[in-house]
Length: 64
Length: 141
Picture 1: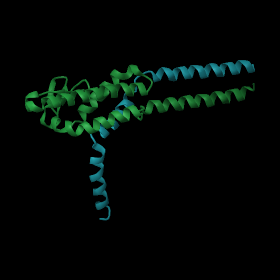
Picture 2 (picture 1 turned 45 degrees about the vertical axis):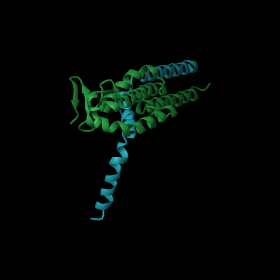
Picture 3 (picture 1 turned 90 degrees about the vertical axis):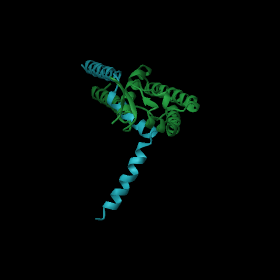
Picture 4 (picture 1 turned 135 degrees about the vertical axis):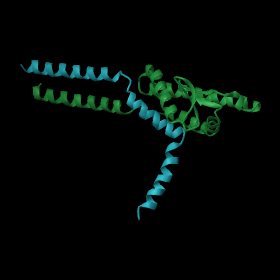
């Protein structure tokens, strides 16, 4: 009985793990898009350019 | 071995596997020395490429590269230099797509990484830049 339980548990872990690996071989499109955007931000230097005026506007607008 | 102990170990192992996979799904690895070097090289080149995008001489192609779209808008004396810029940029981009796929343990993802980048470069292009869509070259609005 003990052996059977342990065997079942092990089989279950192996199956779920295999399932996860199967999922992971598909191309993660959303993650790739995020990665692309982060690299494009840096190469085209978009983030600094947009962040600076926004921060300025926030600090100026805050006291009013 | 105690069956409960065994089961608990199984759960811990499972939690680790799921956690790792979930992380891998959420983010692609892009922080490798090779990728950083490529990014830096492309960032420096962008200073020279930006005016060429704006003038329409160089456009963003549908395959994730840049292309000399209108050679006649570049003075003859500078054409060689622009060609070299385009070639260097495309070499870096090809290496970048390959490195991202490799850094994530799936070299076969290179084509899909390239496709994703091609879409994002074009969608994020500034108004006035030329981009290549399904219907050919058009000015980004």
